[in-house]
Length: 486
Ligand SMILES: Cc1cc2nc3c(=O)[nH]c(=O)nc-3n(C[C@H](O)[C@H](O)[C@H](O)COP(=O)(O)OP(=O)(O)OC[C@H]3O[C@@H](n4cnc5c(N)ncnc54)[C@H](O)[C@@H]3O)c2cc1C
Image (cartoon, rainbow, N blue to C red; front, side, top):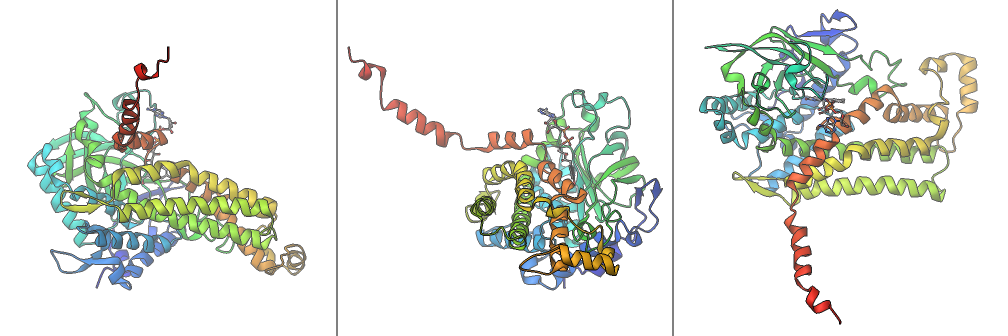
């Protein structure tokens, strides 16, 4: 039997320090800002335990069923099954739970695919990676991660941000471990995760050794402070008005490490600027993370196309040729992204004895989709017109008889009643226009790093020879000499 939602929630009963609206949150699981996302996260574990063949594998150590994302595929069939599990997981939130447990779990599977990488630091660090991977796999833990230095002045070095505690760095070390202080951005799902993995994606150089760390700790470890952004759940008037904000606000937070003691067996890179960023692209971490991300994005784009289609049916524009052109454009983009995801599964490569997606396939589609999602939202808004705003202020308007009568007379559609029309338009607003929706547009643009970093990955991974060879062969087939006619 794999971990259930109840068991996951029992594991959360620690003293994690979450700050919201100027207060330390006493019981996060009962707090209106976080209660729904705990419920959603627990439902993911329940979904897994009731679909074990699809969603789980057997731990080679304990013999228990654990999430499939911990298993590094050794055959193409296993890779395809991994993809199917990511898709099924994403479908539970229509793609709106970005950092579901299989997200950072996949980063760890990718790191475990090349434990030797960490021997470049030393044997002890490599052993720490191996043992920690087995620990999180066998307990089927939910991890968040923070691998970006907080945005301050990007023209200055990490140590020159004007405050000693701006960016997480090592402040002490002894025989038992290291002590870290300072901040990291942005712990999505930190509120609901079991553990936090911290590293550095920003380039570091000589002199930045104190910042060149990667480590993991339980979310409730003394000194870890979770400074949550505002809640979209509590800002929502009801589930009818905001069906996505009220279920899938996975939370984002600045994580502040206040003199946090990290034992050596949880330190994976120590004072190595050359390794701390490379641990993501020098292993398979980035790529397996991208596989999960693209599986989720395909689900989310399908959902958005579904919203667009229902809107055009509801407002009676579905048969207008320009509207069909726009729907065709939306469906074309989903098909292309889905095709890239399938190519990642069906045209894999070998890596350290494992069978994994090609880096260039996933880097390419990831960079392509960074601004595509915002364009998607724009097209759906254009299809919708002011119907997204011509809506009752909240579900309560239906409870007042005179208002209800006016709503029924004015929210007209040939395919549904007033309640159906309002329900759809409110869902559409939460998907494309609300604060929740706006945050998702930013998420898709930045979750894997800024666009210039995504394009740099493409530059580094593309098979340039495949193009330059054609150019060189063609140019070798003619000469200046043969072309001179006089
Ligand atoms: C909703 C959301 C959730 C997130 N969740 C997580 C998470 O769970 N874990 C995590 O670790 N991170 C998370 N992040 C952080 C994310 O990884 C970063 O936002 C991303 O890496 C970009 O870094 P930045 O925001 O500091 O932008 P910056 O690096 O400051 O870049 C901002 C813009 O400045 C320009 N720019 C900056 N530097 C350069 C340069 N050297 N060359 C050219 N142009 C440049 C670019 O136009 C860039 O787009 C999240 C972000 C968002 C928005």
